[in-house]
Each structure stands twice: as structure tokens, then as C-alpha cells.
Length: 386
Image (cartoon, rainbow, N blue to C red):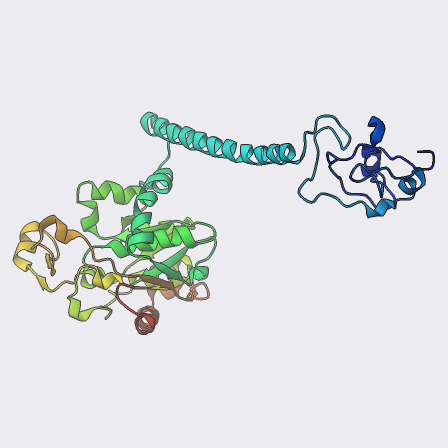
């Protein structure tokens, strides 16, 4: 080997100039006769399979003709080390190294979830958590209540959301939506849609009717979810704090209307939501919900029973109360929730909130935009259930 220049593997890999040779694993037939090993990283023309090439032939072999073994990227101990035991061993070791981190990640992820759950329980038991002045519990909403609503949202109603980019990333805004469905599930689904689809994961604070806050259990859950009384004072306070507020001006007239009047908007009250937005300079975002009208087709109203129970209406549907508790199960309709372009209010002077004509015009504009979008979505809908 007087003429051959032997370059050690480590030096060859770290050279700054010239073309670098890829790492090559030594095969089993790389020994010369007489027990002498060939130089690492250099393969003779006649010595590849152990043949007897001449010294001149071996030294004249071009270095750039060396071809790497594609399946091997690194070798334990270097190219000429004694720790290698053939191709099968190297591939097996590489496979074990790639599978081990995956198992560790799974175990670590499970441990983190268990630790997080235990920490959550400890905080709930010891009272080490925060609620705001309205009773909103952000931690409980994120980790428990939203998780309970999400299967109904994703699997049962299969809600499609459009126009979520129209909701601002920060600051106060008022979302105004149509109301329907006999039971107020549309508000809850809208709340999940905003939280799960908005890039900043914003929370929607819904304004609810008085009845919600006099019912046992429902009152507590509504407060924890961030709902508050539908009054101007609470709405202005939330908007002033930069919260995203949701209101359904139709109220009981919308949610309790007969099935024959579905998707026909009822009167939007006296426009109180418009004056609230004007006072705070918050944009108004119209929202149209399709699919909620058919979950409980209301074919009748037992008014006498409703008065005895103190309800605004007592619905009669094709399944309730005839099937008992099973009749309370909503039909699995396909929903679409679309958020329209915001209507700005910050360009109006502060005294505009006292102008009845302006409030009437803005209220009518919001109502017409919601109604027009409802008709458009209904035309595009293929089926009630698909």
C-alpha cells in the first residue's frame, strides 16, 4: 500500500474541502487473503469480493467510485470498528432506536394527562380556582363542560362553521343570531363553534333569559359557562371588558315558534342590543344557524300546562311526550353556522344610542342580513340530515 493514501473515517467525514464521501458499512467479504484488512472507506477494483488484485490495481481504484449502502446512515463505532455484526444487526439496532422514543412519548403523554387530571381535581377540591364577577369558570369550561358538549357538536349535529374570520381577535364584539329549536341548544353549539374554530380560541359569553337562572342545576351550569342575564347593564360591562358577547333577540318567540314557521325570523324586540353596541362602540356580527329548527319539530303547544309549570310554552312534538324520556332526544340534523361580516358602530357619536330611528335602522339591517343568509344556506343544503 505504498501508493494508496489511507484516510481515516473520522478525518474524512470532517474535511472542509473537496467532496465528502458518504458513510459505507463494511461487508463480510472485505478481507484480503492473508488476513490483512482493506483500508476503511476504500474499495479495490478486484478486492470487493475477496479476490487477489495486484497492488497497482488496488491503488489505482478511483475514490469517487465508492457507493454507499443507502439503508445505513451511521455505524456504531465507525466504519472499521469491531462492534458491527453485519447488515441485519445494524438494521435491527436502527429500528429499535426509532421505536423506543415513540413508546416513551406515549408513556410520557399518558403520565402528563394523569398528572394534569389529578392537579385539576386537587384545585377543585381545595377551591384553588378563579371565577369572575358573573360566575364564569374558565378552567371548568375548557376542561369539562366544552368536552361534554363537543361530541354532540362534532358527531351528532356535525356542525359546519363558516365566516369565523369575521370575529375579531380581541376586543369587545356583539354576535347576534337567530334562535330556534324548542330547547336552546343552538346557543351552546354556537359557543363551541367560536371556541374551537376561532384562531385565538375566544370564549362567547351568552345573554340568557330569566328562566335559565331560576332553574336548579341549569342555573349553576349556565353561570359556569359564562352566561349572564340578558340586560343592558351586564352586556355593556362585558363589552367594556373586551369580551365576546352573544345575544338572540327573538327570545322565546323564536325558540318556541311552530314548526310551520321555521326559519322565519320573529321580531327583534326593541333593539336594545343595538344601543348597547353603540354605547361601547362594539361591532355587531350577524350569525345565521341552520339545522336547529328541525331537532324538535314543534307541532303543538299545551298552553294550560305551560302556565301551571311557569314555562312560556310546553312543546308537543312527534316524539314528546308520547315516547317519554326517549322523546326528549333531539333529531340528528346537519347544522351550519355562518358568521356574517361585522357592522361597525364606532363611527357613531355617543349620543347615537338615544336615537330611536338609528336603532331601528340598524336593527332592521342586522335582521335582514341574518334572514338573507338563512335563505341562502337553505338553498345550498342537500338534506336536513346529511
